[in-house]
Image 1: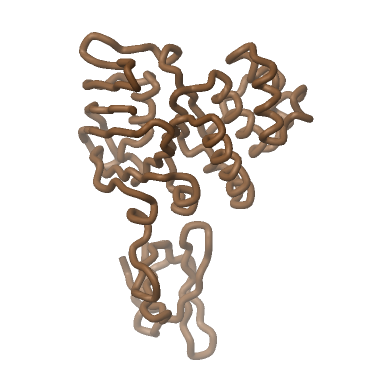
Image 2: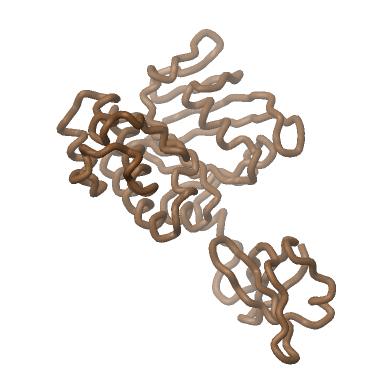
Amino acid sequence: MIAININKKLHGSSGAMLLEVDLHIKEGDFVALAGESGSGKTTLLRILAGLEEAKGTIKVADEVWQDTKTCLKPQSRGIGFVFQDYALFPNMTIEENLLFVAKDKALASHLLELTGLDSLKNRLPNILSGGQQQRVSLCRALMNRPKVLLMDEPLSALDPAMRTKLQHEILALHKEFGTTTIMVSHDPSEIYRLAGRVVVLNHGSIIKDGTPKEVLLQTSGSQKFTFEGELLDLLQAGVVNIAVVSIGQQLVEVVITQSQAKSLVLGQRVRVSTKAFAPILTQE
């Protein structure tokens, strides 16, 4: 069990705010932290890692990581941290990057085999692809068999196909090592695929907490549902007006009226909603 009860004054995207989190996480859970940029997600990860200070308490199992008298250093917390930028040592081979954390060749070989990197163990990071480098980063984070694995948008720089492949590998490693995993992500499909629980932050506070289905799915069946996106283009095909909208990593075309086309501005946020499979588009 991880018990977190912390607060910290921050300057968020909309000004000063108080990050205030009271959260309990079961051992072995996979928790996704979601919410808008500047809501405090990454700061919370860094506080858990001991990389930033905050007021309050953090307790993992029977060990106190932080209270009024104690604040364990990052290296004493038994964590693994996977960053967006890989943070690999460029002058070390893949295997050396892993062995720098723990001199356990058997574990290093096992991790590299699981992630399909065993044949590349003697190469330097700079000749690897982004996906391969992120796998090395993940393997390195697991080398000390951490109690808690923290991941800050680890796959955000990768293409969709590679993201999906690594998501499966992350889930497999999470299950094999039984690590409690906390991941920051903005990708609903990634959260749905990986996490068993979603905690949504807004302006430093938890506003939603539940399963991915409870938090992410707005409706079910053929009822009305809504997606938000960016208006990329307005086209005219004969007498029909079409709006091109970017939703997540996909583009959709929606038929709109002539009056709607005149009122819309490229680049603005819009909602695409449907009821009984008849999509309509409205300004946000």
